[in-house]
Image (cartoon, rainbow, N blue to C red; front, side, top):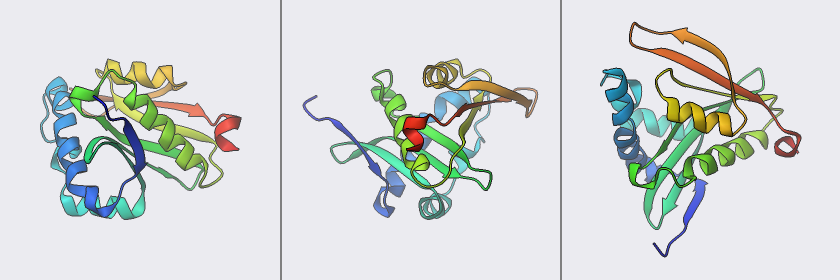
Length: 164
């Protein structure tokens, strides 16, 4: 390829690329659950721009192209909540999802007294569950949302090296 992927903080100019990547990346999830009305596929550009101002949003860039993204925030209990981890389909299975996950953990851990990290995925999203387990996350809850979907919550305590 000749270029390396750089992870950085997203900016306002990234909003459209993030939304397009999110739409592309969540197609497989929609198909898996038979639901094309999931929030990542229906989110508006205006809503995403608001998230850019309110949350930590990171992007992975290959040159000028956004090929990965992740979001997070620290809640009032000190839990780093991570969501919308998405990697362009052609860039998957090269460790980029793990790099984004580690980067957002570092970013959130540097913001406040974070005690743990938490994220969720669908019960059929086994690849996502394996990725998170490889990075120290353990299943803490399964909550049925509908006949077709249960959300699997996974969490991990903050490692001393991340918190420092």
